[in-house]
Length: 23
Image 1: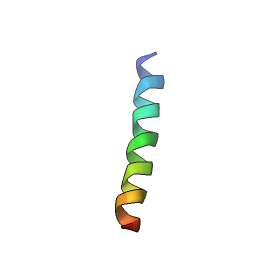
Image 2: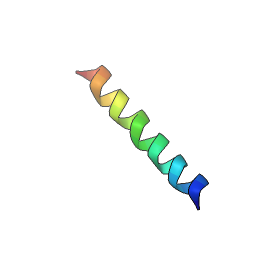
Image 3: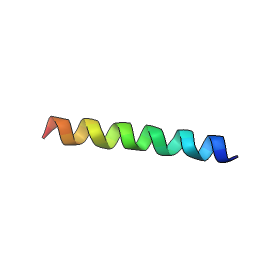
Image 4: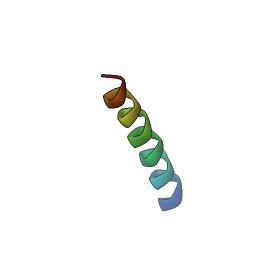
């Protein structure tokens, strides 16, 4: 369970970074 949550958080972080880079 913890691994799944960590994976989801990592995906969200990557998407957020992409949005910030696009700015």
